[in-house]
Image (cartoon, rainbow, N blue to C red; front, side, top):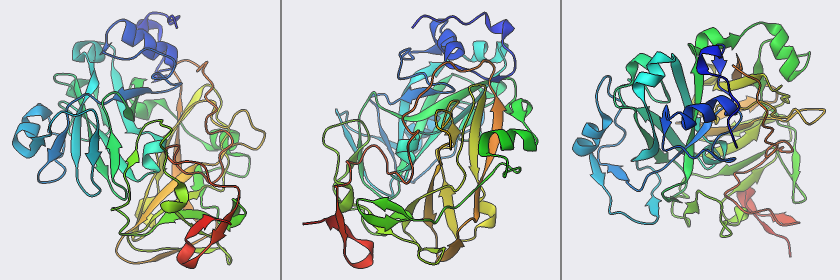
Length: 385
């Protein structure tokens, strides 16, 4: 597609749309980017793995302020033998240099800030994928003045499943802003009412424990018990070889509007609120983990313009939750996350309806449920005879 974006000096502060990001790619502020209909979304660009992979011998190494991360890879990383595919084992940390890179001078001249997050399909298999930008001292983003070389990396840690990745796939996405994101935020109860409905004035998302029907069985959550790391690995790209979900996941119904997060287990749940996001607004979803005790919530934090906008009721978001050291009991309607609304620098013209009809939904990397399931012990399920 040909870019119709005006010169960057005319852009107003906000999240850059697909047209503006494409302009940056065509003018080589973002190098080696795939400027096609799939890589550039309505408010973010996909970042792709290179052929190099490093196993971090001592675990995660935090980004280094003002330094080249490649130096950390030489000291703490073990470069793996080049392969068409890499198996990443649960509990281990790996780093991939990314195919895309930024031109620091252009980023600084244009006052462009970056935020990143794992893609939603990646988060739903309990894989942490965190961006590292050379010179930045924190994960998942950068300020323009912090960039040094413009090289980008992604740190990947599978938590529950062993996974398989290959060069050219995308695990992470980058959202770009003209101006500081804090100055692009939309505040006040009116935007919350617009996106979430008039009953919600504080931009929060709460837990929905009503049961959905999954292949004939009631469930308010999917979960994986601790210790399932030895199952067949999951491929993190589109393939006909998708694993059968009942071999990995269990179902849990909620009968009394209460739900227990068991230590070490990984859960997929959903929000009670339904989102209808207009083309001029982008969202970051931040977990309210400081109030929820011994559990960790993570969500692929970007919600893109048009999400749920084609439905009358809107679309729920999916929570990914991992228990920590002891069980936590949650109630229906408990607040789980907070939304931050950002204005778009230019309204998005792209409407991706991939998740518009989602309710309680696994990652696209798993196959479909059968028409009918039967339930065994401990939430285990299998196709009905």
